Length: 343
Image (cartoon, rainbow, N blue to C red; front, top):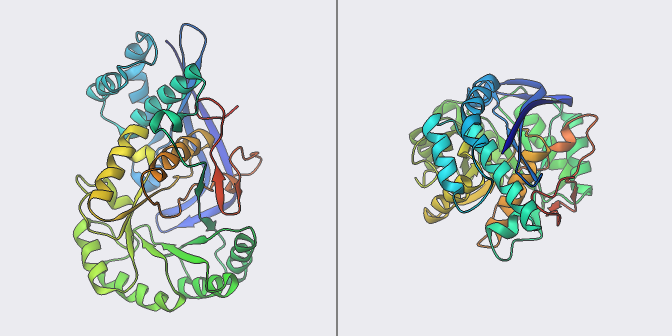
């Protein structure tokens, strides 16, 4: 196969402020695999160093290490898992393995003339419910964004907390969306256990659908969950060995980049469900390829059970990007084209 690597940059329309820092631009590495018949598959390596501690350069080095192996492969076929395992033996980096996995699935779908989701399960969902993300730091701006999301049909809005006037913004968002829209907050592990318990207690009157990653670490999350009424989810903590199936939280957020691709995410989701917890997928501010891959994965998972609203409506956060996967009525439709369905 022919192997190509190229960086792609996306600038956010407004900086996203989180407890781990401010993100103004997103840079990912695109992997394109082309077989002997000229059919291509595209994957995306999308680590986010402030969030997951993995520099993009590190992922690119791993992909370069995989290059000889990929160039010698005949294309997608039954040995998908063997090829991924061989890449993992060279350099076990999930963000890079995700790019290979996604590209191979895209290539397989294009060769078969079918969407990736239909390769993953017989009857995938035709659309995936998603949440809107409120990025404004001030109360008025947050209320305006949340009100617009509710009018657009989003059933859940998400607010970053652990950054400034949390209680004021969360209260303003609740007032703006009314009582029927779910309100999710995401601390990105900003708090210690006592801080998390106190902060959640101050936010609970607004009515919380989920509190995502209030603190880091399975045992710390367990302690917070035992002390609050709100439902608790893990995100970053899901990277700990055994965390998806540990039953430490009410819900688990999975990301393809962190899991190592579509196949590994499906496996992790099965572990979550076996523990009795709810699962959902989110974008780590991925580009269109990463979001499309997660959308196909979510559609396959929905055929087998419920998902919490997924955090995949993030492409509108980028400026000068025509969104190929727009949310309508709070859901993103599964593309019906072959592979990932992107032009």
